[in-house]
Amino acid sequence: MKKVFPIFLFVLMLTGFSVIATFAQGGKYKVENNTSPVWKALEDYYSKSAKVVLARDVEAALKMRELLTVETPDGKIHDSAEFAEATKAMFKLNPQILGVSNKILSLTTEGNEAVAVVFQEFSRMQNLAGKLRRVDSSVIQTEIFTKTAEGWKIRYVYDIHGQKRFVDGKRIDPTKPFNPNDPPFNPDNDEPEK
Image (tube, rainbow, N blue to C red; front, top):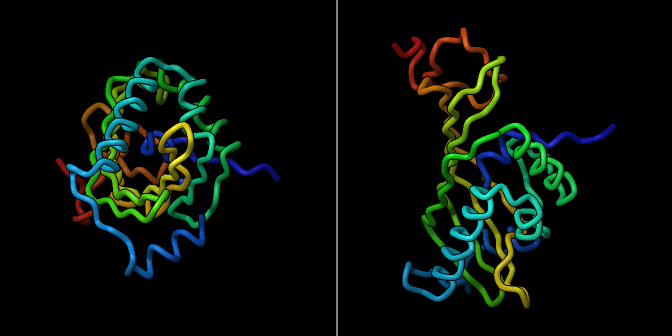
């Protein structure tokens, strides 16, 4: 049976196992600050990535993520081929991309490996329930990068959490299919938002 990569997670992620375990053990890794060369290099990577997505350059987006593997919140692992298909589908589903941003919250390095915790926002116009609607989403995720001859490349994404999604300004549950008749999603309260 073919695995299906959740498109909504790609949208939130505009990716190792031994590296994850080693970083989790701590100790020999250097915590970087926002003036370090690695921090600046990853900021440049995110800036270039945003430009590629805004320009709807599918081939450049795929090239930047050619090593990418994603571990989704349900524990499933999606390889680079699945991610490539999700990338192509994302561009088809979103005829207009309004904005992409990535803010590094923390960065830890060891040699040619870097682990960044990132706050990502993505805004676009998407066809949902028979209508073109504005969709704004955000997420916090951990991203592992490897330094290659071509520069830093994202290799693994995991610990995806804090997902928020708004459709035409109304917050919705990011884990469920969109239904325009659903009340606003309010995870902190049992009563719907007004």
